Image (cartoon, rainbow, N blue to C red; front, side, top):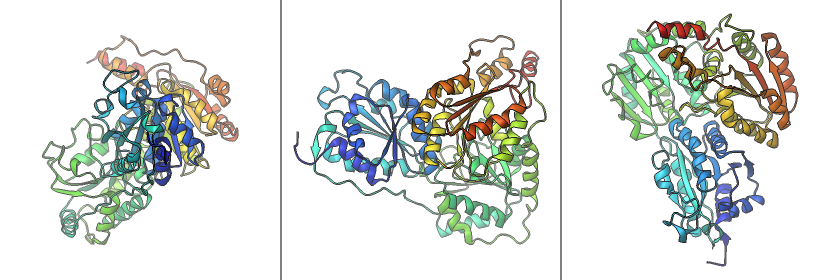
Amino acid sequence: MQTNGKTGGQLIVDALEAQGVERVFCVPGESYLAVLDALHDSPIRTINARHESGAAMMAEAEGKLTGRPGICFVTRGPGATNAAPGVHVAQQDSTPMILFIGQIERGMRGRDAFQEVDYTLMFGGMAKWVAEIDSADRVPEMVSRAFHTALAGRPGPVVLVLPEDMLVETADVAAARSAQPVDSAPTPAQVAEVGRLLAGAKRPLVIAGGSRWTEDAVASLHVFAETFALPVAVTFRRQMLFDHTHPNYAGDIGLGINPKLVTLVKDADVILLLGGRFSEVPSQSYGLLGIPETGKTLIHVHPGAEELGRVYNPDLAINATPGGFLDAVAGLEAPASPAWAGRAETAHAAYTAWSEPPATIPGDVQMGAVMSWLRDTLPDDAILTNGAGNYATWIHRFWRFRRFATQAAPVCGSMGYGLPAAVAAKLLHPERDVVCFAGDGCFQMTGLEFGTAVQEGANLIVLVIDNGMYGTIRMHQEREYPGRVSGTALTNPDFAALARAYGGHGETVERTEEFAPAFERARASGRPAILHVRLDPEALTPNRSLSDIRAAGRQR
């Protein structure tokens, strides 16, 4: 072992500081004690979560909201396997993230030592790069490469494995400077072709999605849409990419899609797919476009060259970031009298009608009234988070996103995501309202992270929408096997009492009129809060009751 320089643990922390990392999320473990020791004297804030899945989801959410890799540390074996859900979210959602895993000593490899795992095999199908740092003097190189890889092209997760003995080995090496993502833009010929294809269109449509967006790029998309009078739709859980009150906004292409938006996509003759992949959910199970020939003129713009032509054969493939593309096409002249004039206004009117909450649903809590009140009360910069479940429809359909970086939700549909994401969002923006929506089943997958919120002073508000079941699965169950309930019922705790037990603010909402004052008290409490909203089990979706779905299933 070398005796000069800094330990591998200190070099890891130096490298993170050089990258501008402000916080790391972790569950502590003996396999990386040297890193924890180095963090003791670092300005980097250490957030110790209650479970590795929560820590990894917090890191992913920070990556999603900032565009810089979120950082997570976990210990070997069970710690690493517990973190896998967050890595999966980062992969499917194209989010930059780096997972550091403590590992057995180098001399024990291959003996099936205590908690030994081959992480290349485990994470190879999810992460962009998996590597083990086998020598302390390579820490700056490997961490720099990890940041560059996580940020490049289509962003995603990187896994770096840290042998325990490497972390106490010393080396005299300097940290690498901060990694910056490589931007890419269309060629002049491609810009001209975009102009030509749009000029010849009769029913064009822009579909925005993916990552690598910035606030400036979102603003440029608004200008581009206005200049060309184009309707703009966004993909599943990418709603923060366009102001929902803008007259060119057409809605989100996801679960429970507006039927009129389906028609708009099918009727389009030219589609500009900007930044996204148009995968299973937005494509309605790959049914809206032909594969590989789409049956339309497709302009596909994506920062990852490997995604161009992967599923759809584009007429014009452009390897560019959304911002790089929009900067390049800013000088294009729009037709004076476009053939599609008025289509954006019609599409926006259809969205506006679709996004009006229903007047009544079964039960004493009317979620439509709740959403209307939240829409009128919360500021435009409020951040909303959620996991997965039917309850999320209340956000996706009825909340109107106005600003970039106000949404943290898993494109991959991972349950349990909302609360860890809200913790990360509130730590990132303590001055802003952060509201987590969670179903009773969704919340209980990571609900212990409410303790992390209390410990860290992350004064978020959680709305636990409790209908006593795994609602989405029950919906499918009643459709396919009506009346044969199996494995979907839940016996739940008093979630408000749980909040108080952790030292937070907790209230129960059983009637619509109780919600607004309870929310205001939670907001004023100065503590993390849970509002336990008891929803009638019949209110399974905004439009259909549990009984309706069961009856329809019996008629199949």
